[in-house]
Amino acid sequence: MLKIRCNRVSSKAHKFWYALLFLLCASFGLRAAPLSECSTLRVSGNPEYPPLLWPSVESPDLLNGAVPHFLRELVEPLGIKVNVRNIGSWARVQRLAELGEVDLVAGAFITAERLGYLDYILPPMMHLDTNVWVPRQRMFEYRHWPDLEGKQGSTLIDNSFGERFDSFAADHLDILGVRSIHQSYLMADIGRIDYVLYELLQGRAKLARYGMSNDFVALEPPVSREGLFFAFPKLSRCNSKALREAFAARLLELTEQGRLEELIEEYLIRYTEEGR
Image (tube, rainbow, N blue to C red; front, side, top):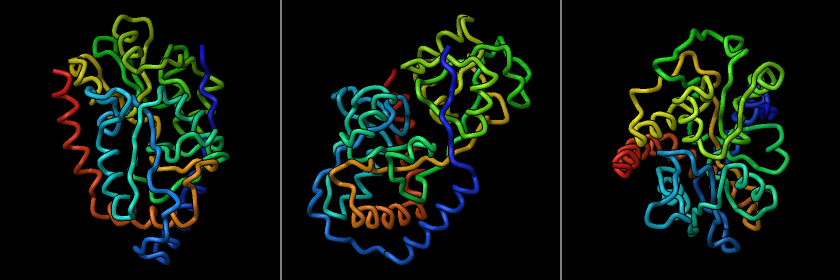
């Protein structure tokens, strides 16, 4: 069984980086730096992340969703186009980002490992709860992490849920890594596993699409609540100080307007209706 072993920087580190970038954004203002050296961003992210990201029905090699729409609104005023491609599983996206074969990761939690090859842009685009999902007919009592001991879980390969939970999971829990979260839900539905670890927003979208909304329950409390970030791979040809500064200023502006939240509502409806 796959053990979850990724580490995440501490909440104190999060606060430090948030404060630092807010100061930087204030000093940069909303001006656009010269960005002519990067006219198009090669973007990818987790394809199992509706309503934020999912493969387009018309063009499966492209990713659709609230984040691509949000990203276009963010960078087009800077004179930059975006190409949000479906390049495979979340694990593959991370490997290619480490090699600099994508220019922007559209949605990643902070982990110590990823800090080695990604430059995160603050503020986070949003915060996400990750919950324990269980079949409604086989619910069990859950109050804190030790209640998962002795049970079999599943999640996407290379998913991470916070430094403290990841460390606990590596030492005490059995969590099977799979390429598709649909596989996890199907295994839970037939009793092969006891629970699915997955984000609350994305889980609701997926289950609605599968027609399984009434079959699963997200137990409370969440196992974690993490900021979701845009991040430039350190080896990307587009990763420049000028672009990061201009990108951060635009991101702060749109975040304060609540623009992504508006798009999430719109694309949640689109994703659900697309599956009918």
